Length: 308
Image 1: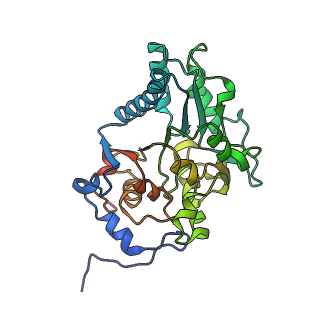
Image 2 (image 1 turned 180 degrees about the vertical axis):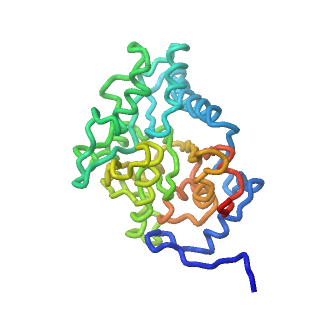
Image 3 (image 1 turned 90 degrees about the vertical axis):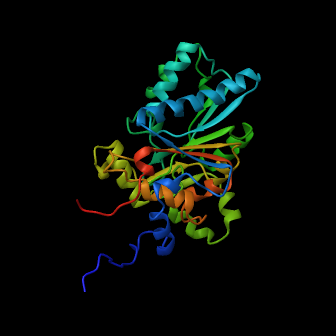
């Protein structure tokens, strides 16, 4: 008898193996996507990539302006990808003469070689290179933060990077995205195996050096290295869940799409936002704390499986 159902196991390299939870996430419709039982977990949909980038930029600037108005320091955790929001932010900062003198930034992560040595800032593939060339260097010199207040994880400081964030007063806002694998920053799903069901221990895990998951290698090869997976470094230095959880707020933005037929984050956006809260899907932790979770319109569209 002909059937349109084909049952199969999940690939063995995937740490998360709950097929029932995957099916439930897959079946969440666009109409239900923004609904969540935690009222402090706000899911929003952007109409376009440019609209989302501008909203991302406005959110970064809003956090800075609030601190300036209150005459206090502000600490932000920032991702280095996507980058278009930073160009929007730099233009607005210059136009409105917004001072960043009381801003301290901590970047989420940085690539590292097989020995854990982080990439130099002169390498165009490094996140430090991207942040300076597409954000900090675009800001008028008299408005920029002090060079000592622009901080990046490295092989030299990763063992104390979480302590550095703590000493700065913890982050006012942690900005970020969700990887195809379900990672946040470069905290990959296979790291969750060591924590089992101990969510408290997982949430308290500090920054460390990590091996990148195969899905992360492939995703980053596509969006940053012209598809050249041999060019993507195998490891990274990354903040830990404790740094994300200890922030006073979280603002996460998903734009993993190459057009309506190539929205590869549709499934992981659902699993992270609506699936089980588990160390095997690190981004699922966002469901448990006050967070904004914004996705492109095509990511909110229904998940379909078709070779047409």
